Length: 145
Image (cartoon, rainbow, N blue to C red; front, side):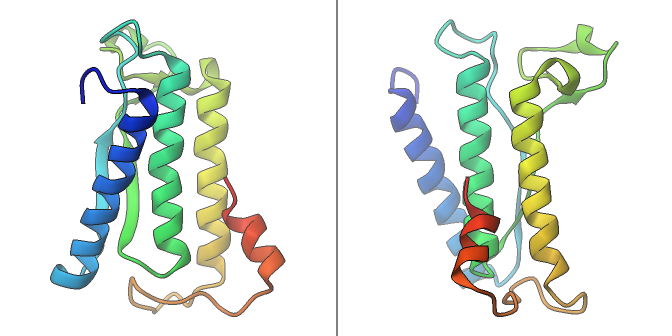
């Protein structure tokens, strides 16, 4: 979507993910994992750490929406997370978490929300299990962005 506004790009990502999650649920009857996603901060001057973080937040938001309703969105693997000292391999997609506090916070919050959800779900359940009953307030807290 070269030339599109950032919001148009994010809306495209939302729609694209929703369509693939729906296909996984309704056609394939299996989970879907979104892998190797990211935004290069070196590709163009219009992309930077802020646009990358908005993109990551959008992807995680769609995954949490799917999880919340017991949908097929099973996970996401960000491209690329580097430990300190290996950042020389960065092609613009790399994230060194100690240097990227906002990105690290987004990833940590997403992991914590998934962990809380999974703690309420039976281990033996199928990928489409429904969460245990809970109050609306705790539901909003768990899945707010």
